[in-house]
Length: 303
Image (cartoon, rainbow, N blue to C red; front, side):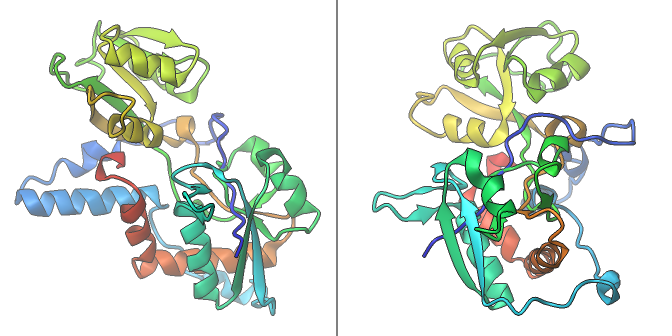
C-alpha cells in the first residue's frame, strides 16, 4: 500500500494583516500553578492542540459545500526522506506521522488509501496533473506554495525552540535573560529573523547550516542556539549530541515567522476534495485521534 502526503518546508513567513505577536505557548500555559501534575497535563494538551491547528471549525457552511465525493480511493503523494514525518523503516515500508495521518483520514472517510513516495520537486506537478489526489509531505502554507496548490487547514505547526548545554550557565530564555549571551542560529532562516526582531541585545552568531550551530553549542562556542523545534529535539535526544544539551524555554509558534503550519495540498480549484479532507481532519481533532497521533510520534519537549 502506498501513501501520498507533502509537508511544506519553505521558511518564508506567511502574510498577516495583524501587527501583534502572539505570546509563546509557554507564557500562557505556565500561569497554571495549582497541582503540578494537572498543570503538566493541561500544558501538554494546550500545546498539542496549538500544534495541530487549535480550534475546530463548525461546518455551518455545509449548505454551500460540495457533496461528498463518490470516490473509493484517495491517492496521496509523499516523500521517503523526511523522518519522523515520512520515511522508510528497516524493511523498506513507509512510516511516519504523515503516513499514519493519511491512513487515519482514509479510515475516517471510509476510503481506500494509496500512499506513494516521489521526489520532492515532482509533488505539485503530480497533483495538478491529476496523477495523485493530494500531497502530504511537509509543506507549509505560504505565498509560494499557495501559487502551486490549494491547501486544507493546517494540521501541524512547527515550533522554534532553544537548546542549552546541560553543564552550562542557567539561562532564562527571554530577551532580558539572553542579554549579551551568544546565540547560535542558521543564517538566512526564519529563526534568524525572529532573533533579529526580539533578541536584539543578544550576540547572535550566524552559521551556514543548523548542524554547524548545533555543533557550536555542543562544543561551547555559543551559550544557546535557536532552531526548528522538531529537528532540535531529535538531535538533543539522539547520539550526535553526545548527551550535551537540553531544550529550554519556548515553544515559539509565531506565524509571522514560522508560518501557518503544515497542510495537505490538492489540485488548484479542487474544492470538493479540500472540503472532504478538512472534514476528516476536523473529526480527528474533535475525537482526540490527532492529539494521540502527535503524542505518539513526538517527544513531549517538542511542544
